[in-house]
Amino acid sequence: MFTIAAGALSMALLPFTIASLIGRGARFLLVAGLMAWGGARMEAALRRYVDRLGWATVALLALGLLAYR
Image 1 (cartoon, rainbow, N blue to C red):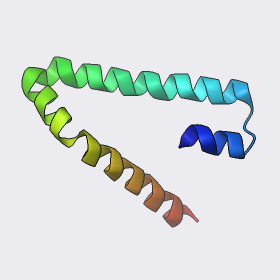
Image 2 (image 1 turned 30 degrees about the horizontal axis):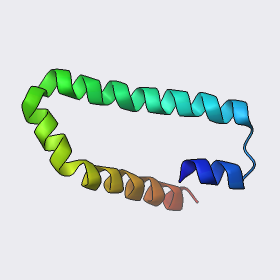
Image 3 (image 1 turned 45 degrees about the horizontal axis):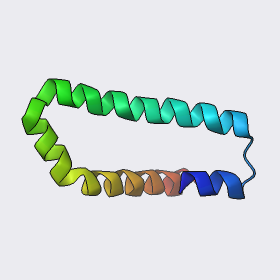
Image 4 (image 1 turned 90 degrees about the horizontal axis):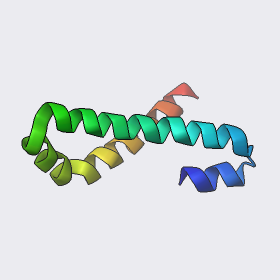
């Protein structure tokens, strides 16, 4: 979704690439930290709720953008 939006808005390639690397790196570090902290139990919980957590994050972002405007 963000890749398509960046293309539709003609975002420059270099800032998009840097933002993608930072964002994806932070996500993978967060997941790795949660796995190290919670172990197998955290892995099971993440697998069970990953879709809900993702959609909740998107909804919060959308609400935040609406509130900002």
